[in-house]
Image (cartoon, rainbow, N blue to C red; front, side, top):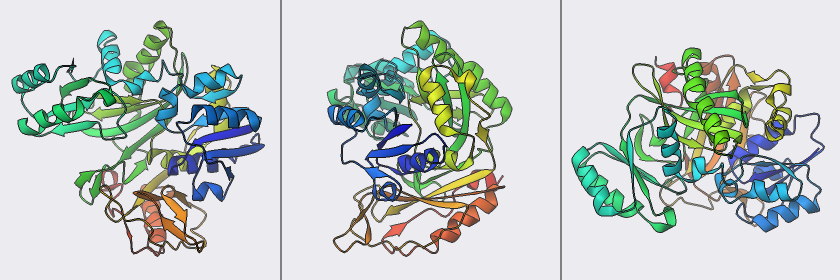
Amino acid sequence: MRILVVGNGAREHALVWRLSQSPDAELIIAAPGNTGIAGLVTCHNIAVTDMDGLVDLARLERIDFVVVGPEAPLTLGLVDRLAENSILALGPGAEAARLEGSKAFTKALCAAHQIPTAAFETFVDADLAKAYVRARGAPIVIKADGLAAGKGVVVATNLEEALAAIDHLLDVKLGGRIVVEECLFGEEVSFFALCDGSRALSLGAAQDHKRAFDGDLGPNTGGMGAYGPAAVFTPAIEARVMNEIINPTLAAMAQNGTPFRGILFAGLMIEPTGAPRLIEFNVRLGDPETQVLMMRLEGDLLAAFLASARGDLSRIPAFGQKGAAICVVMAAEGYPGTPKTGTIIRLPADPGPMTRIFHAGTGLDTGGQLVAQGGRVLSITAKSDGLAAARQNAYDVIDRIDWPGGFCRRDIGWRALDR
């Protein structure tokens, strides 16, 4: 089978690495890919939002199956465009991708089908939104309706922050609407389900670390690390999530005439009582959670992805997660503000059999040296039987990386290891 992986991050590097282990993977290419991916497969410099370019590439390379990493091409309808050309793809069509593309759509669906989530209201008028916030008080959460590259959510701790967020996020480029919702408390967990339109199969859960610095201090980021399995996410809670959130969502989407196939990523708040509530849906794998999932995966990922895309998960062989894994993100100095790029990175020749270095924001300078070209640059991901050993393996490799221009958190996994 000839496969195209769309995307250019550490998530896609991990996907290419794992898919290449399938006996049915005859050829894998990536678009646009990155420096690390280019060490495994051929990369084509086509942007993830270039629908015509991606479809033309798939046709030219006689691609049988496309795995879409990021959200933008899904919400833009890449899967629909590929289907028009008889090319199978993992992921929802544009209508089903509204679960991520429009927070207002998802919240309305939750309200209509009794899916547990935060209390909310949707606004297109700033004055009405501000009156609602003044009546409710803070803390309160303000969300842009549309995609905002991870910058569309403000958790306002006081009234002034909330009012400023309304003015900032009520932007036509972000959907022209905002969702104002109650602030949930507890532990956040990322849960991933592989869906075929009517059924779902658990891919496992991971716990992300959003703040830039140790102790969950500093500004929010795209994610400074993750680990799995998530200690707070017990089998009993997983069963509740499937019964109360995932399965009702699939039924609702099918009822709407837009059945959901692909990866359903539920961002969850596990309340102190153990009750799960939905924070938001994404319609693809997360980063850095994917790196953890790919290390823990037992089974043929390609076979599972194909079963989802074909609409029949009942036919896949044994599939699941085993052991523990941790991902530590190394970022460029200045991230999540303006990262310092061009700094030279020297990697160890052999990180070891249980550790992988997945690339994101890397490139090569004119002399062929590896350099930083973005904010989140490397994902050092290690696996072991237990989380403590996995974390030790990851930090041992980090200590062998020569990169004065980079930094990382030293406490990834603390929620589980400090219990």
